[in-house]
Length: 482
Image (cartoon, helix red, strand yellow):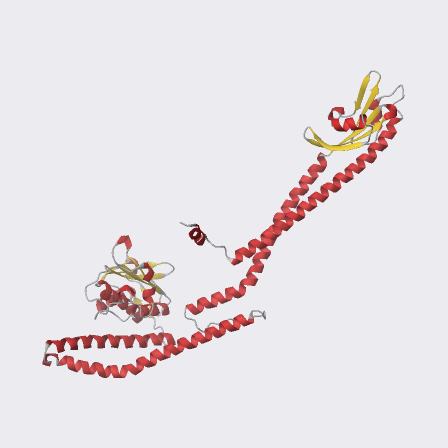
C-alpha cells in the first residue's frame, strides 16, 4: 500500500472534535504558560526576600558578636545561642593554637559551608552569599568577615521549606491547568455546537429530503450572515420539489393518455390471438406471439407507472385489518408462484394475528416471487420469522446467480434490473417491481433489502421487514392454521 493510500484510509476527525481539541489545547497552553510564569515569579520573589532578610540579619548578628570575641572568657556556643536568628549560625575564629569552629547545629556547622564561599570570606575578606545544596537539602549561606578579630561569621538558612511550598504551589497550578483545560474543552464543545448548529439543521433537512419529505424547509436564521444560505437552500428544495412533482405529473399524464389506446390495442391483439390458427403461415403466428407478449409487457409498464405516480402524489393509504401473517404468506405464495414453494416459519407465529395492510403485504411478496421467477428460475423457499424491535421478517430465497454487492441497493431503484437489464427477453420485467415493493414496505413503516443466502448457499435472499401491531380487543381474531 502506498503512502497516499494509507493517508486516504486514515480516519478523519470531525470538525466539532477539532474545534473542541483546539479550545482544549489553547486552554492547556495558556494555563501552562501562566502556571510556569507564576511559579517562576513566586520562586524568585521568595528567594530574593529570604536572601535580603538573611543578609541584613547576618550583618546585624556579626556586629553583635564581634565585640565579644576578644574577651578572655569568650564562650562561642553561648554567644551564638544568645543571637536572635532562625538560621544556623557558624563562627570560625583563628587562634594561636589553630582554628576554632563554633555552631549550634551539628548538621549545619562549618562542614556544611561551601568551600568557595568560605575562601571568599576568610581569605579574600569580602562579604558573600551563596545558594547551594548539601546532603540533598537546598541551603542559603551568608558570610561576613571579621578581620580585626581574625574571625568569620556565617549564617546557614535551610531553604527546604521554600522548595516544599513551591512544590505544593506547582501541584496546585497543574491541577488548575487541568481544570482550565477541561473548561476549555467544554467551552469548545459548546462553541462548536453553536457554530455548527446551522450545518446540523441543514444535514437533518437534507436527510429528510433524501427520504422523500420534500416539504422540509429550514427555519429563518437569526444570524444575518446565515440568512442567504438558508434562503438559497429553501429555494433549491422548492425548485427540486417542483421538478419532481412536474415529472411525476408528466409520468401520470402520459400513463393515463396511453391507457386508452393501449386498451384498444390489447383488445385488437386479443381478437387476432383468438384467430391465431387462421393466420397464413408460421412466421405470422410467431410475430403475433411476440406482439402479444410485448403488449402485455407494455400494459404492465403502464399499470406500474400509474401506481408509482400514486405513490409520488401521496394518494396511497393504509387499510389495516387483523391478519394471520402465516396464512397471508401462504396465500401469496400459492397465488404468485408457478411451482410449489415451501414456506418455513417460526412456530410462535402460527396462530398469531397482527394488524397490517394485507393487500400490500401480498403485493410485496408477489413482486419478490415474480422477480425470482424472471431472473433466478423461481423461488426455492419462503421464510417468516420474528425480527428485532417488534418486527417480522419475510424472506424469499432463490437459487440463481445472486446479486452483486454493488447492486444490492440499486436494484430497488426505478427501472433498475441489475446486470440482467441489458438483455431483452420476453420474461424480463420493466424494472419497477422491486421499486414498488420498496414503496409498499416504506408506506407500512418497513423496509426491504437483498442479501446473500445463509450458509454460503448459491442465490439471493430478498427480505421484507414489517413492524407488527397487536389488534385491538374489539377486532375479531382470525382462524388458526389447521
